Image 1 (cartoon, rainbow, N blue to C red):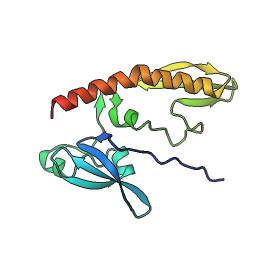
Image 2: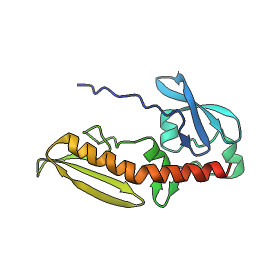
Image 3: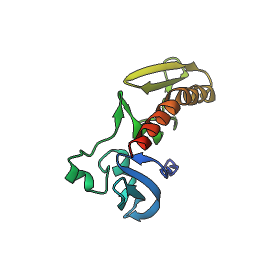
Length: 155
């Protein structure tokens, strides 16, 4: 059975020096995005290259000595939390929510600033999702707002 995948909307998100402007024509069978670099150039980049940190600029970063990498602040990857990334082995479809076979409950957890927080075990899937979403609002939202405020001040 094939799982349906929801297409991510990366519009407005930052990946290194790139800001995603809009979807672009696919590159082969891969989804691509039109991005504007901090230097002003525009480029088209595949989703996978943005999300894994392989492409963080239009190419100008190479000449400036900037490495292609994800942005980590206090052990937290900005791009990963901004994109609500879920691991490839996640079977629930929600980041930080998984099924505990032994206890027959849904577990909710979140990683932030290098620490994993266990948010509880729940009989109902929706309760575990609610706990995870609440933790994202409490931890990720203020963190991203502060990061983006600092980034805007530096431009």
